[in-house]
Length: 152
Image (cartoon, rainbow, N blue to C red):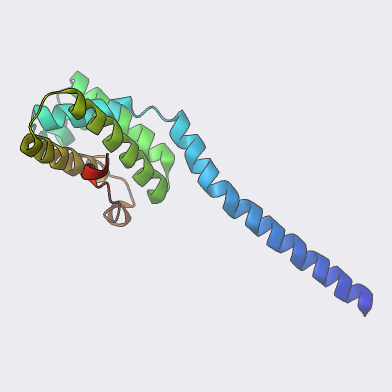
């Protein structure tokens, strides 16, 4: 009986340790994927959308093969990168990275405070539109992704 108890205790200890190891790998896995992801096409797409305001429906038509432009290529590459991140939390982290980068670019230019706020809001809206444009399966969960453009 005591051998069975020791064996059962060892098994439970192993199961708990394996579970803890697996859950500690998840964030690291997301970080690794983010480091490997090329978010530059997303940044270029967002920047052009913000400053060269294009129609969302045109984007979807062009993405499906109608007329193609460099902007279409950026959106297509962006969507591929976001889909590889898979988990909504990891995609949210990618959106935060994109927002950080875009905010830095905004700060390099000379805008007054009001213009900066408006442009930051537009950037945030464009970034949060990516799940829809890319037809990501977890769109609803990404709505909880808070970018807070004022914190960058």
